[in-house]
Image (cartoon, rainbow, N blue to C red; front, side, top):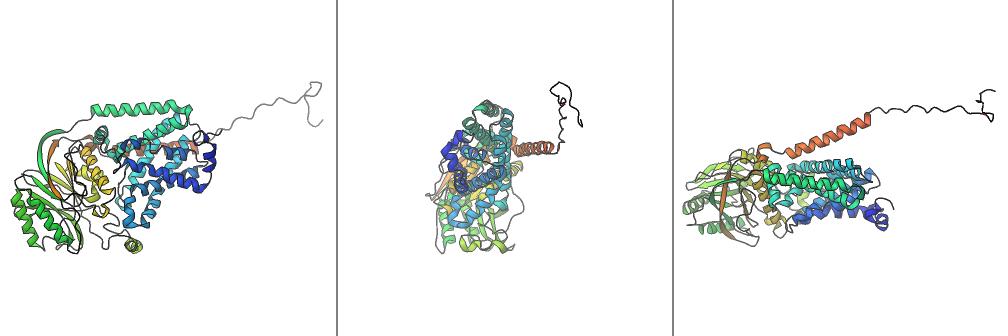
Length: 532
């Protein structure tokens, strides 16, 4: 029996000989990690979810076929993790998944290169470093905001696991992705290659030892006090006058906070649909709410600005006397949702889905605001919470609390609200700063400086205002101090691989000397002589 058939079985191996069948299996294998993310949140499944995909790629008859397995698995992964976009972008979701799935083609080739056949102990050891590094490069490239941003990073599936959150404080979500892929590689070897099980077990032991050491060594947030932060979630409000109706609902909910002594009140994304400079009546109503609750109010304005051309999404702080002047304009916009990339070429997307009819304008810098009561807050808007570098920079700039204003009302009955809310846990753990995730329609959530959940989520069926006692912490996490060092380490590993492969390719081959052949002898044992 040939080696691929050890785990495929002879019948299965023949069945996968069909390119179309193999393509379908690759896409399905790539889709498996989706259940590790919210809403199912089977976080434990992430540690084996890549195994079928790895086993398929290592069984590929050629490197080219393995690259196809990587590409199609990537397509399945992207489509599954972002399936909630289908009602908005329709067929364009599949096109995007196919384009981004191609990023996994080199990864599929690497899987076969290091795990194909019966790999030696050295190849397995190298695979435990190279394959997670290759995966990190895929996540790094697709994290560029123009390609959709870092939604669905594999490490973010571990948002509710305390040891994983501790690791995130050391190396961010990147370190979690690296370790999850490494465990999957080791498990795949244990399943498929009996002769190479020892190095796979050694890799698992090393991973467990490194995780345990980090658990003991990594500093814990030093809690110094707490603040009371209120979240106002109005719920789904539609109709022709939805902007006015939403403001009135948020106003009514905020009034219920009188006497509860909040230090800050946070409204969700697009909570105000009018520029406050053009609507002094709304600014005055907000100022009255601030005086009533004795707290500043962070609203989010989604409208044309009177002092700049175009539409901006902006976090605006309002105090007892009106807007304080503190403002943050959203910097990283959602492709197609808030702008259409290369609109002259891709503008047709507005006719097949709910792509933005007019591009929003970008802000130029992040802002840390003084929200009164001596509290310094760092605002983020919508999917900016998926970017680890943005929350890290706010922590470096002195933010004591991270605030996320979001609206996932378009995806109300999907997995998107839960996925979005879970990201705040990772950002809190990475920075050692509590994070408040306030939305229009749910899920709203609050996390402490270690990524632990504070209070209960406000689900998508809630229309309410809730007050949370949020612990404050001081100190600097290793991730804030050293940044994306796992990504840099992965780059070094891949650079070393390229250098090694290049040296092997261009190394001059030594030609073996011709063997000495004794002269032929005649029947009388005398040397034969040519020419006679």
